[in-house]
Length: 175
Length: 175
Image 1 (spheres, chains in turn cyan, purple):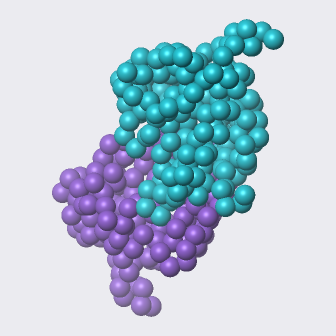
Image 2 (cartoon, chains in turn cyan, brown):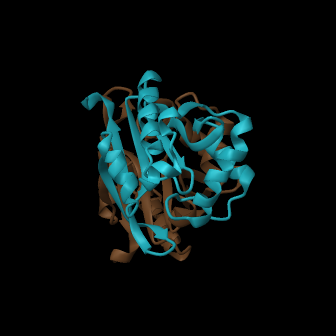
Image 3 (cartoon, rainbow over the protein chains, first blue to last red):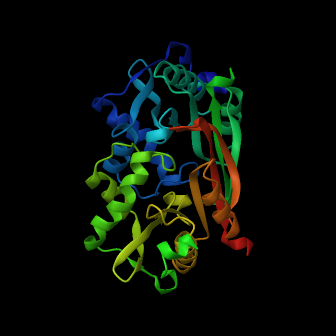
């Protein structure tokens, strides 16, 4: 029950499009994830403005999940390729430190899949899932993603060394 | 023999780093490839300056293969990911229209593999090889690439419709 005590109000959480006023809270979630370098192929010393620009803006549409006014997690959605590949989207997800396993990630990925379909995308691709990120991989599988590629020793994990990364794909036309 | 008449001097061709003076010749090769939209996931109406910026500059190091002063093809090399993924590189290759099959692609990919190893990369990844681009796929396989992923219907080909794209990987540590 510890998880529920940590976070009693997930049922009251809601998801909305991020605005610039959310930057500080998003950075407070993103910063430790970038600094530990275990799950994203992002330079560990990436500065706040670069990280926020890359997460929230450009080709990314950015969403947050919040309880009251506390941001608990965030995701972005964008086309994964342009031109002849622009019907497949890509997303990235972050959950506030200490809150993994409470369901915020699942709420966000389901939201993103619904949004992607509404936007007309035909599938969602994750290009680089670190192969020892078991909780994430299990979550992606539970909502319809399949492992479609394995990149040999493509990620240098800070404690586990060189490990594989996975390409995962959710093909909406299979449903 | 038609190919050799078209292009008698591949044995005299050489590869060097591209400079800004090469932009017009590179664009003359890149433009029809982008406009036909059959092999790269790049918007078909991409403008010259955007295309050249994306091909030659930024994180890309750009090379050309030339006969005398005529540019016959070009490639770029860059890290495929940053952070924990920056030991794997990515490359893209273009050959002047009508000159496919003359060996320029093979000379460039061999050059890129040697360069990548010198630069300290541990592998080379192609993220999005259009699955009906058989000549390219056979060339990549002949120099050590393996298909490590298949992206279902991820490419909208102008004449063949929705077809798969492939992830191909050359793991230098396997040699």
